[in-house]
Image 1 (tube, one colour):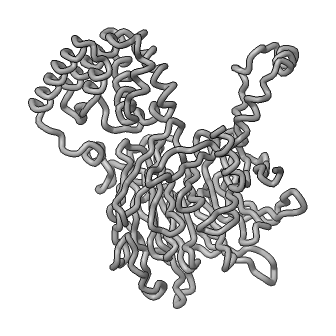
Image 2 (tube, rainbow over the protein chains, first blue to last red; image 1 turned 120 degrees about the horizontal axis):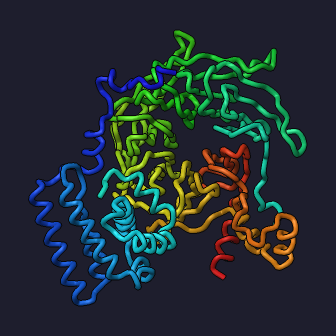
Image 3 (cartoon, rainbow over the protein chains, first blue to last red; image 1 turned 180 degrees about the vertical axis):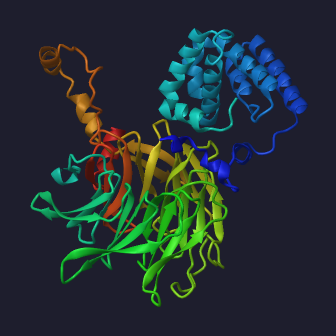
Length: 154
Length: 374
C-alpha cells in the first residue's frame, strides 16, 4: 500500500494549494502593525467596558472583526487574551450573554473557546468549559462544526 | 393519518450510496456501497431483486433514472460512467460506455430535464457534460473546467435544460452554462444571464464559513439556488433580487437539499432526519425537523417504561440507549423527488448509511407545524 503515501498533488501543476485556499477564504491580510494596533485598541475599549460593568458590550466588542490570516500570531494571541478576560469576568452571566449574541458572534466565540482550550497553561479550562456548555446549548453542534470547517482561524 | 407516516424500505444489504426510482415508482435502482447496482421491482408490499448491473469495477457513486426515456446512468470511482438501456427482446439492461476523459473518480451524475444530456461530476476538478453523438453512436463528454479548483460533489439541472449548478470541495457553489450546440435551443433569458455559451460562469457563491459544498438544488422556477455545506449552513441565492442568505443551523451538517416548493426546502444529512427550512417574508429560517419519531420516543417515557427498562437492561435512564430517535439511524446521503410536481412536491425519498430508504409525505407538514405552535 506504499502508493497510498505518494503525494499525487506534487506532480500536479495546477494543484489547489493551501495558500490559494487561504486567500480565497480570508482575502488580503492587512499589514501586521495595523492589525496589532487595532487589536490593542480593542483591548483598551473592552477594558473600559468591563470597568463600567458592561459585560454584554465587552463580549460583543471583543468578538468583533477578529484577526484572520497567517503571520498574525502576536495579534491573535493578544485578541484571544482580551476575549479570555471578558469570559473570566462574565462567567456568572454566561447563559444569558450567549443567548444575546448574533449567530455570527456565537461562531466567533466558539472559535475563541477552542483557541483558549488549546493553551490550558494560560487559561482556566474550567471557565472555558462552562462557556462551552452554555454556548452549545444555544448554538448547537452546528456551531462546533463551523469552528472546524472555517479556514479563518483565530 | 396512516398515509402521512413515512414508508420505510429496509434492505439490510449495507449502506446505500445512491438510489433512483423509475418513472412509475415500480422499480428502484440502488447501490449498496459496492461496484454493483441492484434493480428491485415492487411486488406487493416488498421489493424483489430483478436485475443487477455489473460493469463498474469500483464502488458506484451515483445513479440516475431518466423517467421519460427509461435510461439509467451510473458513475463510479473507476472513472467511468455507463448509460444503461433495457433491451426489449432479451429484457436485459445493456451498458454503453461514456467517454468522460477524467483521471479521478466520478462522484455524481444527473440527467438533464429533457434527458438529452447528463452531467458527471468528478474528482478531476471538472464536470463532464455528456450528450449523444449520432455520427459515432456513443455518448461524449464536454468538460466544464474553469474555475473549479477541487472535487465536484453534487450537481443540479435548471429546468431550462441549460444551466447546471455544482457544489464543490473548494467551498464554492457555482452555476454554469452547459449549453451544447446542436442539442440545445437557445434558452430564454433568466436572472442567471442572457447569453450563455458553454462554460459561462453565471454565479459563484460561498457560505462564508468554509466547508465543502455537499448539496445544491435549483428552486422549482429555477430562479433561486440553495446549497448546503459541511459548515452546517444552508445558503439561498436569488440573483433576481441579489439576495444571498445564509442560515447557520445548530445541527450537524446537511448533505443533500431538495425544494418542496418555492418557499420550503428540506435538507438532510449527518443529523439523520430531514429538516424543513421556510421562507417567511423574504427571510429564510430553520423551521422544524420532519421526523416525528423524536416526539414519539419522548412521550413514551413513562413510569412503566422505566421499570421495564430496569428489568430488562438494568438501566433506569435512557442515557445509554444506542438508538437515536429518528427513522434513519445513520447519515442520510441522498434526498430525492418521489411524487407530485416540481412546483409542489408531495413525496420525497431519503436513503442513507443505515441501509434504509424512506418515502416521506409532505402532507403532514402543516400538521407538524400546527402542533409546534400549540
